[in-house]
Length: 328
Image (cartoon, rainbow, N blue to C red):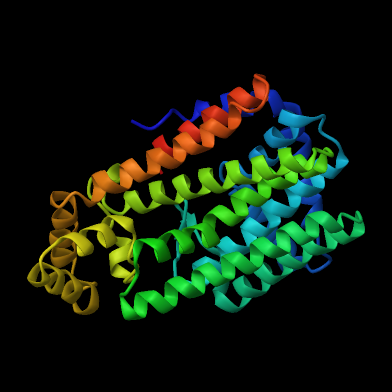
């Protein structure tokens, strides 16, 4: 059972004031003199989602210090980068919907979407430079590099269908955990936390990011909202995630060949994809992945015990719970 939506409100409670100020700060950071850009950016802001990354940045800052101007720069930087990558992802995946709304490429075509993604990325980098936040720029540039490598590694491996568990963790660290780790790292950095605190909070973000991505990968195999059935989107895109990787490693050659054939040749056939999903469930792929996800949840919570108990600490714990029990 996923936590109620109000749980995000509860999580935000210690930084409610800051998040309100951040909204106008973020809008301002996206401004442009080109009317089309402003129209598209306005559409993006209205569908901003749960703002998990800025929340993480502010809570991490509050955990070890007092929120300052530098924290707002860090939060805007990660949100601009995250938004840019989502827009680019939708183009790459030819996805015409995101969070129940049309994606930018559905409304304004791929060319405009790619350019808007580029614009937001450059806005983030310029924001850091304008505020002389060179350390923040280094952290975020590393995350962008990791994310691009992760997506390309997944692309390469989905062609060959030869992903091992180690490669899977490498991919999800790069494509998801690296940005979440940069949020928690930047939060600490922005308030002048010492090196040890910065490293610990970065590690916390890494573990949380890995758990977060595994939860996303499980959605492919679980009944979804009104649809009432698993989506199987990853299989349709020939992406091997942990439930399937585990099963392919632990079944007979004959079963493995049958599964690989579906992924290679029948990945658009809904009936065959449903059969494969059922097979993965029966062979323990879901349970294995869920247990791994819980391991990472515990690792992230263990780090928080090194910090004094506070409202921010409590909210970060709730955010970890939210990440693995959300239903979308």
